[in-house]
Image 1: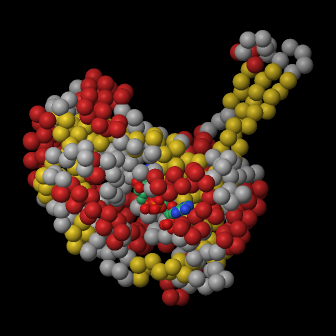
Image 2 (image 1 turned 30 degrees about the vertical axis):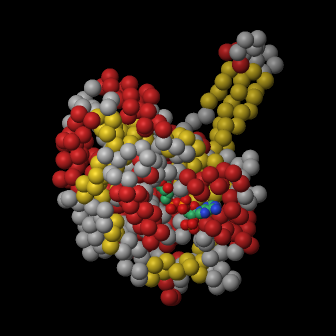
Length: 488
Ligand code: NAP
Ligand code: G3H
């Protein structure tokens, strides 16, 4: 019932603008077909630049009143949204499974995790306080001056989300932005937009005033540049590929950016690693959702002495992965998001084969399903050593010692996360200290959560820091009011 408004007959989905579900005046639509079976999931509106203007204008207007709403009241909307989302786990997960080919368990856990994220954001915002700074800490000043520092919203936040977590990576922008007093214009990935529209409906039903959250749909290649350079956008929170992230940062001026981009996360395996724990983590880290996660394990750097043993155990584990149709079975390896993505991964596999890597398992393709693929003896001349597949392909690169592992890990243009598998805490810290990444995981796969931890990429993997409190801080600024006391 709750979702009736966002879709009219014939599966045509509308956009939330100024609190109403609206269609484009041109009637131009984009068909969203399922990567699983090519069936029609629905059609989304292809908005014109004039319609984008209208959505942004509404966001700007609505923010003027929203910023005056007390934080505790903004938090109440978030608590209601979290509760409603939990009630709709199954329905939203069902859409997501069809739209982005996610398996049932992962889709449902994405929605539940998002409800927890929203609730925690409300808690965090209520716990955030300003500070007062006395002047006499600084040489030459006495107590007659004091700075009262509070936090202010930035204005209109443009949230651009990717296909792979259409609900979670939209909500993790929307919730911290609105609790900080901003309004939001959400531009979801085209493939994934329907799932994101369900989320917008949940925020509306939770009582978010009209205009505080607006959605824009249309191809990024058509309206993306227009949105990011729009004069009334005050902040851009983007998650997606490094290619598009670079483009946005090159065409925008004086706009603050928060960007989470691509990665080539390495799992560094030392001689003393617990191999069973290592294999379990690497397999789920590399292959779940077909490796379509920014934090997926995307290369293994293993000390030569234990490489044979590790390769053997990985090969055994990879053969057990379930591959197929996520609408029918609980599988780990699903069809990739589109044919272009599958072609790209196939190209990486071919390059590795042609250049002499040892194919331990997989390497084959059926439609857009790339079977889980494991290569050993990958060398630094192969594309697989450096490029992000966003697919279920994992290269093993053998190294002589930990310093060589660090050197190769840091040669990557990316710097999202790395794992180190070892029982030696000194070695773990030695490596962690030298890795040029946002996060180092010791004895665990690379991953974003828990969502209140800081999450960031360095080099080509991002700008700024996400994570609940960090995101609220990123989308607000300090405001200093200096009190000058005459006699003290
Ligand atoms: P993408 O192709 O970069 O698209 C991301 C978003 O940008 C989509 O909403 C897309 O819209 C939009 N877009 C496209 N062109 C644009 C432009 N010129 N201006 C503004 N927006 C534009 O990425 P994706 O394929 O959805 O996701 C996969 C990539 O995202 C991978 O590289 C992955 O590593 C990265 N990722 C990173 C993280 C992280 O936290 N570090 C998380 C998830 C994904 P359309 O869909 O309409 O083109
Ligand atoms: O795809 C990028 C996500 O931020 C990764 O999140 O580590 O929870 O899968 P995850």
